Length: 115
Image (tube, rainbow, N blue to C red; front, side):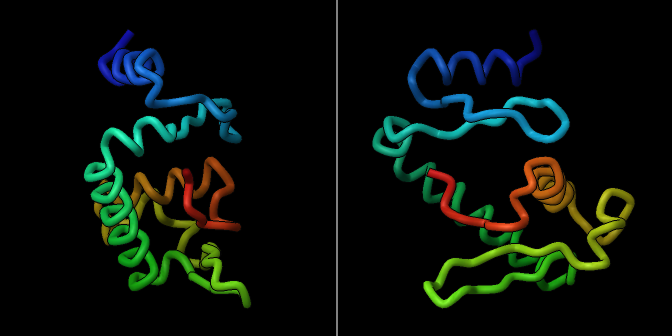
């Protein structure tokens, strides 16, 4: 078991993380629990800000498009440029990680609050 797997297991044991399914590559998907949100609100806020910065950067670089519906819910759509995200020298490792999440979870059709 590698370090990441050990951390995931420890967070599950503490009640901070719950598995919610699998991505289209068969990898497990996890969600932070309400307990984690309550006990680590400052960290949750920092995670949200970081994700927002990465998504904004991908939008500015035209790898994604962000649209809003009448209720104010934001949705992410892939652009033609997104096909080359993995080999792009223009994206940072964090941006590539976000693109991986968008591709493997199908999350690009509705970027919503993940709580």
